[in-house]
Length: 400
Length: 139
Image (cartoon, rainbow over the protein chains, first blue to last red):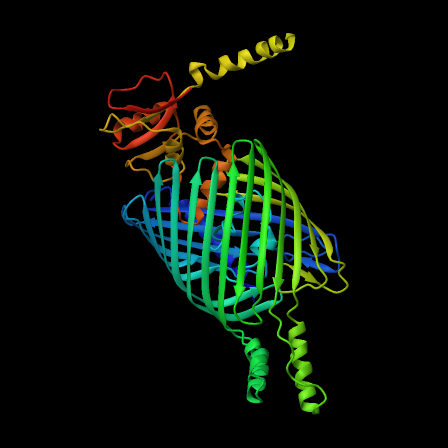
């Protein structure tokens, strides 16, 4: 089903786009339309793996997308914004990404209510706007760690200056009730009590950011829940608890960026802590450096991610009865489907700002994996993968 | 020693070019408080959508404009493409909006004159009406 929706949405976007351009001239001040689009071509040099959806054939329909935004201003303090994104890739759902009311009582304070993107990391709320960042594909080992990207709730933002420092505090609270989109498939999920705080500090050519986010997840994994219930009924409560997929997830992030006319360095480090057994702990970071020679930007980047599960030893004895043996092996096979995973990505690329609103990019990413690969993330082992592959990509980024 | 002379001769013309009046930029505001003086960081924050204690709203020139290129280089310290990508991120995450763009220096001057609280950058040497105040200058 997911494969059909993008086309419908893309068609809707195109119709809206046509309508938008005719309307634009009339009510320019109250109603404003804008948008972004990207066309990305990719090819993976390995037939035994898949990375960011790309396989050993040339493909355009993994990251290409079209986004449209409408802003309606009621008065100086109140406005409403909607953003519709049509994705070609199957790992992202198309539709309304943002729909919120903004209340801006002063230059310093802004409050948004409605459906919004979660500002976990620096680019979490602008993942789809490729024009906004230098890379063609964001460092996946870092950005592929949040399984959900939107929430419904309230977000407040307060900015002020102190001497030459510019300080921005942000906090949000809400819930998520949709699906977790994993590379291996979708899972029905709810996240309640979702909240986060972050601080962004700018000083001269530096910007620093720190964020903390948490939520209580309730994931529907029918087979796992069934097995967990069965184990509990015969008294293996520790094993049953380990398999319980619902619990708290926390995200911590730190970032430091430097940029001037000629160079930039961007870095982020994050830790995700999953309270329950089958939600892993994830440590990830990236560091990128670039050189600007307008209109070109040349960059290199390295990113790394370690996924580790708090594996619980099998407490079910073997050899007592055939039923228990069966249960023990079922438990072991479930455990085996949550392997620890270490991957890293090294990339080199170039961005050419051809027009003020059009950029072309070319990028090469070498992805390397450890012994075991969790197929829930960007890298998938299709069988006999030797743990190393190169992704070649070309892309066009457009904002209007 | 000869090398020092060579270097001196080589670098002299560029020093003259940098301090040439045609390349100096002034930041001009239509404000009742004529005593306002901003530093480079404050001007940069203001034109990048940052909060400032004063209630001023920035206007800019279009991307290819030479005065804008000088302003980007000398005051903001970022390339045009980096500025464009910054505004794309701000716009599509609903954080900030880019300054209103006005076609030419003459029209900026006109706009500043007619809008209290407006602030814009112009080439130094332009004749200013008395309503406007120079709040920052860079050579």
